[in-house]
Image (cartoon, rainbow, N blue to C red; front, top):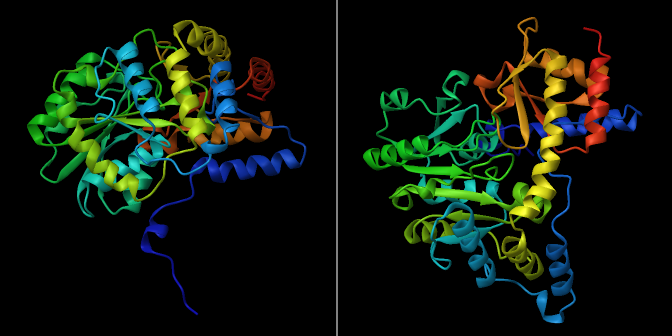
Length: 389
């Protein structure tokens, strides 16, 4: 037999962290005790009310059947309420909010709903690798637009205007930005909405980090007219310490939501009733004080340690970054970023992320995750201090 995979399988690679974590697991099996400061998976638990609600519903005999793909009304209402309280954005819970099982899935639904094979999409460089991978899988034409440190990692709109935009269907954007920590700006959102309307392009803003070390949470939907031409993804993974629960949402106008829901309804059923009702409980009860005590104060302490690690590595970084990572430029003495990250992994036994995985504009940067206990981060700092310079 001579069976070959589809071409799309050859066009993508296994996700970097999936591949690298196998290597880390092997090193741990050899007794190396690797400290991971790479993955953005919150290590703190959800609120007690959230867990209690999950357990309560799980005890109900009638709670274990299939759930509607559209999501339970209680969850949709809670999501709309979260947007009203957090961003001051009014949403119709039944037509402008769509629960999904994660932002990765939302990226897939938006791509399938708006793009035919060969259509063009604009993706930030550096940017979340899944934007590229999913568009490769579905056969769209990818064009990267540059984000640069000297511009605060914001889009260069003069450069965008000079591009041939005639075949562009979607522009992907992500603020607060991952991996760079560049914060959302009202001016950027206003320019994106204007750009979208003038060029008949849909802007998709990926917004999971706005509550992490950020004094001014923003949504692109705060801009007048944004619902007409924009989609926003938001997730509970980072903000509510629920990465493994797989609860997120798509926000847009009813027409766009209906198109994406056609795709979604053919791919997934609604998640377990207990998860949906527990997620609603989290949105309704996790107030500013909960976020301060259970997220912000922890990340603030860890951020100080991450900055000390960057200093030990000789990396330069912007102290105004937000989010759950720290992004830094490596010293010129290294030929490339993996020369540094592999040295740190194999000599200090600390796993940090090389920036090249986010695009060519990240090739001289490293990213440190704040999703490790304080003690582990301090231990990583001491190991790195002991490195032979």
